[in-house]
Amino acid sequence: MNKTSKILRYVSRRLLQGIPIILAIVVLNFFLLNMADGDAVDVLAGEAGSATPEYMAELRAKFGLDQPLPVQLAVYLKNVVSLDLGYSFRHDMPVARLIIDRFWPTLLLMVSTIILAVGFGILLGLLAAINLNTWKDTVITIFALITYATPLFWVGLMMIVVFSLRLGWFPTSGMENIAAFYEGFDRVKDIAVHLVLPTITLSLFYLALYTRMMRASMLEQYGLDYVVTARAKGVSERRITFVHVLRNAMLPVVTMAGVQVGALIGGSVIVESVFAWPGLGMLAFESLFARDLNLLLGIFLLSSALVVVVNLIVDVIYCFLDPRIEVD
Image (tube, rainbow, N blue to C red; front, top):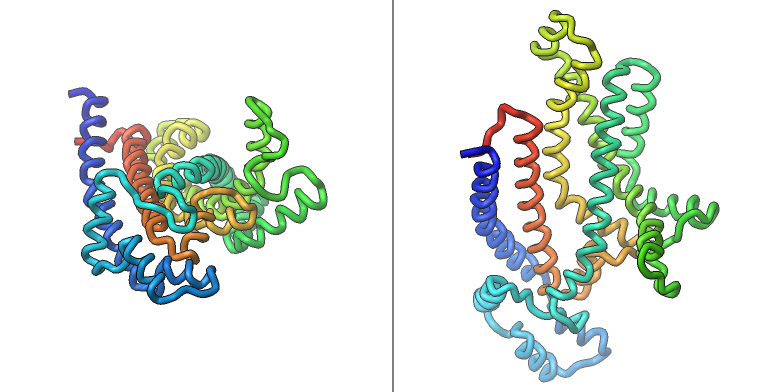
């Protein structure tokens, strides 16, 4: 069996193994969210200003909230298996449709952030390691420490003040200029301009993390026996760094990038709120206060599935970065 067939079989097996994991996360989230006081009916009644107990009981019966918790869970799991995520009381539309509409802005923000953070993190970590104990190493290390310790919301606000309000280079908020009615390439360009500040803001924290990790990993690889042997054989430092050390040093960074996909969605809550980016993070924030449990559960379900898939992709990438790793 060739390598491609082994990888496909491995991917299929891992996807099947991920199904019970996702279902377990759904059950856990269901009980955790229902432990909080109040429900969507209480929120709707509070917004209306007044509601009779009879009307609230009627709403709970309509939404199925009058049933015992195990019955509600069984109904929800049955719907999830049939790909029905329920109905959003707050937005008055199916959860699946709402999540799909908001998923693409979040995916765009996440992919841009990962590319920027991982790419520049590897580059800066490599530069710091090959220039150890020089001014370049010192500057990169200080930069990583500062960006790692700075809160995301403060960075976002400063980005808006400096680059939007003072310099006028980028828009302050939103995903696109709806009033302009751009189409085709003009719309792509408009979205790209709106994407710059949120991407930089969200990526700075992870950029610092990957930079420090890459630097440490490079230094660790330089001290291993295979590097000493290569130097003894007269292999050039350039070849040792870029052919042997770099590929091995990237493994921890790739692992961390896969693990932090879920954390990216959490971080996007802050960034999307600051820049009014219409993604899943802002949607989850709004649904939490509205007690829209169906919507929250749908977002958590998508997040857990995304983490499973991304970690599977990371495992496959491992096979290409490290020839010693084989899939069964």
